[in-house]
Image (cartoon, rainbow over all chains, first blue to last red):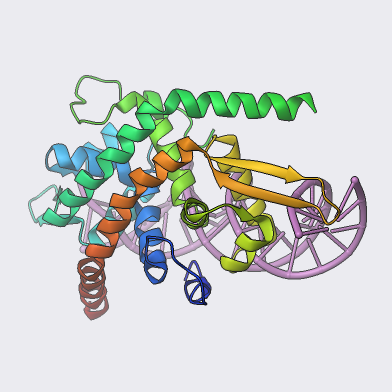
Length: 136
Length: 136
DNA sequence: CGGTATCCGTTCTGATACTG
DNA sequence: CAGTATCAGAACGGATACCG
């Protein structure tokens, strides 16, 4: 829906790069989920332990109720997070990482490490670029 | 700019998860770049070899000229891609990955592998979720 | 408590037209 | 060829109000 037709746009003669072209949509799909404003935070917190809706809302608190719901629903739909409803009096809902979600978390860590290790380089590159652009 | 204030929203009492909270903004920033609709494709192609603007445009072709330009500029600004202008008659511009960009590509691969390996699980989870939702 | 539905401003994107 | 500028439509995200 978000990338209509472009998945089929690369099945021509040359395409020797290492990550499967025809999987790009799924890959991009997953990256979109992960790069989503809040998903990474949610996965990070849930890896730590099980959380209630309001716990997440409070911890991440820049997030609106709507976006937290949307984020959790997406993660749930992808099988990364499990939602458990306790029909108690003041309704209670728990969220936790599924085994699949845990493997994603593991896979994500190197990227986080990369970002941390190269933060200075990226920042410097941006500053240099902006200076050049500003000098023009 | 895109996440005003939320970087400081997690510096309360408890925050034992493994990826540094205060780095989340940079991490999210990098993930945003990478998860961007076209960045991953561009990085993939450039890792393979140097490309001209029009080569990328043709290969990725679902991308509009504008978005390819924007994407390349962002990657260039972050120091991940180098832009070389050849002032020949029919102007020619080459794009290639910088060493830093190459390290990101390397870091990205596991995520791509994850997505590929778990594609079936995610797809199945989505189908199951949608069925349940549809049955209601 | 844990949502869902709706309204509405902001952002993003593609199409188009024009430039060096 | 390789862009930049502009504009309109689509998608996104927050605020609000209401429900189980």
